[in-house]
Amino acid sequence: MGILEGKKGLILGVANNKSIAWGVAQAAKREGATLGFNYLGEMMEKRVRPLAESLDADIIAPMNVSEEASIDAFFAQVKEQWGEIDFIVHSIAFANKDALQNGFSNTSREDFHLALDISAYSFVACAQRAAPMMKAGGSMVTMSYLGAERAVPGYGVMGVAKAALEASTRYLAQDLGQDGIRVNSVSAGPIRTLAASAVGDFRKLMEKSARGSMLGRNVSQEEVGNTTVYLLSDLASGVTGELHYVDAGFHIGAGDPEVD
Ligand code: NAD
Image (cartoon, rainbow, N blue to C red):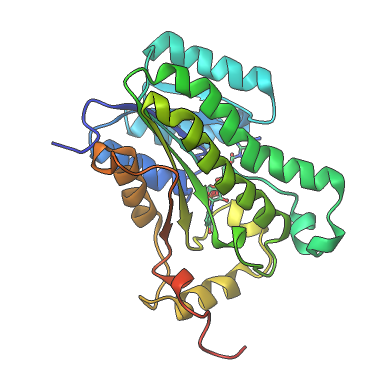
């Protein structure tokens, strides 16, 4: 029997088959979960719908997290179809590419707000709507990166957004713990995805991450998926407010052992 057998949950943030959320979705399905997906706009629907259908998704519906009405409509559909849910996976982020590449000190107010709104506040907005549907307790997981804690070249305002996301995880865990709802972040090592292509010189970042990691390699979306599924499951029933690294041990080291 899978560790998510009998559970229903939302996978928020699949763009294509390279998405971290897709790694989570496959692992969650393998472990017995019934899944619902969102997609961002019609362009994304073409990619997301066939993927979601391949996992027998119950719900495949649009949600743009920068619009309150869109979030409300998505969760209203979830409530109508399912009534109750057991978990959500938030795997959503966005920043203007220019804002990441022009140096953090040049970040405009608009770019700062945009990055924090979509990449951090959206987790709070989704948690607000999901929590009342978690009558039997539940689990929420979001995706972060080491740039929240260290100044990573090319990560700029997204690092500030990830710091806000990680802090939001702790405060959500504090608020929702009384309802038996656990809230955790996964800090994933670099993985080549659509979102990652906005980060300057991502290839170099991946090389440095592999060299500086304890395992001497990068991680896969499957590995992030498996760890996320553990956090979603009752195996992690005593774990909340946690930041769980899936980065082949990069964060415990002193960085790239080779000089640039
Ligand atoms: P991705 O491009 O596959 O996923 C990002 C998702 O965010 C997409 O599905 C996109 O549609 C969605 N999104 C953006 N704006 C949105 C909006 N307004 N409304 C709804 N959805 C919106 O890339 P990914 O790398 O899988 O990113 C998933 C998460 O993992 C992000 O939070 C990212 O920061 C994080 N992460 C990525 C890496 C990496 O190296 N790829 C490492 C650590 C953490």
